[in-house]
Structure formats: structure tokens, C-alpha cells
Amino acid sequence: MPTCRICRGERLNTFLSFGSMPLVNNFLREEQLGTPEHRFPLDVCFCDNCGLVQLGYVVDPEIMFKNYAYLTGASEPLLAHFAALAAEITQRFDVPVGSLVVDVGSNDGTLLQSFQKLGMRVLGVEPAVNISKLAVSRGIETTNDFFSSHVAETISAELGRAKVITAANVLAHVNDPEDFLSGVTSLLDEDGIFVIEVPYLVDLLEKREFDTIYHEHLSYFALRPLMSLFAKFGLGIVRVERISVHGGSLRLYVQKSAHSISPNVSELLKLEERAKLAALETYQKFAEDVSQIKEELRSLLQSLKARGARIVGYGAPAKGNLLLNYCQIGTDILDYIIDTTPFKQGRYTPGTRVPIFPESRFHNAPTDYALLLAWNYTDAILQKEKAYRQAGGKFIVPIPKPRIV
Ligand code: TMP
Image 1 (cartoon, rainbow, N blue to C red):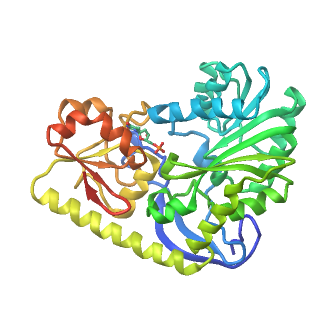
Image 2: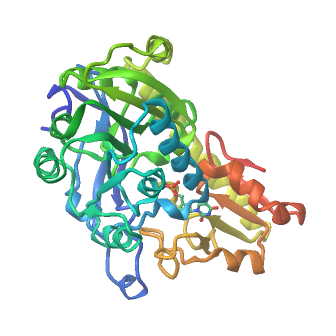
Image 3: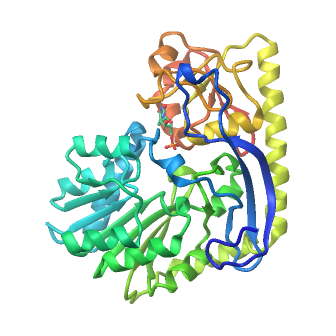
């Protein structure tokens, strides 16, 4: 019987079940098309005791993260986001030049490159072998491992304590947040700063971002469970911001001896009360809405297709694969998908097996509709594809309610 990953409570209520799903970052090579894919249960639960929303089944992290398809640097808006984050941290906390900055889940080193330009000593910790190598080839020293209390000790023994530790879009992926935070606490300097970004449950529910639920994302955090988790390690939140990245996230600035608790912490806690995050009914209603989106999206796409429309997918993010599999959208609807990540091009989407091409294919022969699977970059993509839209091309944005733009 699964127990809560934070409070160890045994009353986990499953409110949404996607059934058996393939791994959404397991993009297939042509020669793999003849072989069935591994599928794993995908059920989402609510802990009656501490309120943490989480998956009921955990896929072995070695399978999910040792060879990884996601590249931070492939999404243009994230480059500016992380450059601004590095500048913000160093300025706000007066981080002296030459300080050690450790980024956990450092991916291709995009964030650390910005810290490096600001004169910091940097180290990435990244479990994916392929992506660590890429970061190293870009001049970012990287420990190829999952971050843990053990890895933290090794780093501090070799390099000393870190003035800054960052973990952007990582904590939700961690199966043992307590060991993770114990590592952060031992590696962080006494006056150091720990900054995390984590997708925010309030945004997920409000904007019906059901496709961000997949095997890699084990926890769906709100502020309240995070505060109790940090408090166990003597960590306090000195500042919290709502940011738009990944469909809406929290950015938390955390310190060991938190002197001034951010005034907007209590505001957010009130917001979470108004959003009724502590009530199981909130999640049951969300599950009903999700099933409604599936029906609406399928009937919209089928009616367009029946009228002879040519439709492609725009972006092949992991969440797009959840959406395609759950809504059963495959090559019967989509001619192909375009994505800027070189590694995904020439491959096929897991489960639905739609071929992925570079953007040029779409630009050279635009279609009537593009299903915006990378909906978190809607503004940037609408701007980028002005010419397509001016020529009459339309986007279909699937959430919070399928609509044509
Ligand atoms: P993410 O939402 O997890 O950051 O993934 C976004 C995916 O969309 C990633 O595979 C890159 C791709 N993408 C494009 O193909 N075109 C774009 O203009 C942008 C911004 C992203």
C-alpha cells in the first residue's frame, strides 16, 4: 500500500486515473516502432493527512532520467528566464564573485552558464548521462548523479559549502524529498540561499493543466505542504513569487535562519484556502473537468478533420504526449509534430507514434491548424508564428478549454 511521500500517511485517495501510460519522454527511434512500449499505471492521489497531491505509483528513476530527452536550452523563452534568475539571485542576496553555485537537475547547464558569466564558480548535478556530457562540453562542470544527502556530502568535502543552491523544476520529480532537503541543508552555507521553482498546484487546477501530470512528476505542490517540509530541516521561506514558467510555478527563496518571512506567504496560504486545496471534492471536480476537455478536444479535432483540414502538433513536450495518449490523438488526426529539440527530431511520440520534424517542415508547407502542445509558450509562439497566422493558419489551444486562435 503506498504511503504519502511527505507525511507517511496511509490514506491516499485516488481521484484521477489515466490508466496505463507510456513514459512521456521515451521518444522512439524508427527501429523501435515494431516493439511494444512499457506502460506504467498513472493514478493521482490526495493525502487525507497532509494534503499533498501525488502519484500512487513510482517508476524507477533510473529508467526515466538516465537518458533524457528534455533540453532546457531548446525553448528560447527559458534562456531569458534563467539569465534573469541568475541576475536576480546574485543582486538580491549580494552574492560575492567567486562563490560556489550548485544547480540541482542542471540539465544542459543553461542556468549555470548565466551564473558563470556573473563570475561564480559553478557545479551542476544531473542524472542524465547524455545531457551531463552536453553540459560538460559547454564548459559546465557537472556531477552525473541524482542529488542526495550522500552526493551533497561528497561535493562539500571537495568544494566546500555552496552560497547558492538552485533546483528549478526538480523537487516534484524527487521520490524522497526529505533526503534531498537533508542534502541541501548540509551543502548550503549558513548564510547561503536555496532557490527552488516548482509547478504550482493552484495553477494546475485553475487552468486544468492535466497534461502536466505524468510519471516523472511525483508531487504536485502547494505552499502549505512545502512549508511544513522545509520546517523539518530548519529552512524558512524568505520570499515567494508566483511565476508564469511551466504553466504557473512558485519560486521560493529559502534560507537556514530565515529572519523575515515574506509577507505574501500568508496571502498565498489564504489563496490556497479559497481554492479549497484541503478538500477531496476539489480534485474530484477537476477530474470531471479533465474528462470533459478530452471529449471536447476530440470532437473539435474530428470535426475539423472531417472537413478536410490539415492539422499538425506544435511542440513535442512531455506533457503533449500525456495529452495525445489520454485523448487518443494519433496519426489519424496529426500529420506530424514539429519541435526545436534536435534529439526529438526524426523520432516518434511514445504511445501515439506521431513523427517529429524540425520547424522548417511546417514553415515550408504550413497547415490549416496547429495543435499547440507547448501551450505554456503560447504568447511567444503566437508572436513567432505571426506570418502563419496572417496567412490564415490557426492554432488550437487545448486547455483550460479547447479553443481556436
Ligand atoms: P517544456 O514545455 O517542457 O519546456 O517543453 C517545450 C517543448 O516545446 C520542447 O520540446 C521544445 C519545444 N518548443 C518548440 O518546438 N518550439 C518553440 O517555439 C518552443 C518555445 C518550444
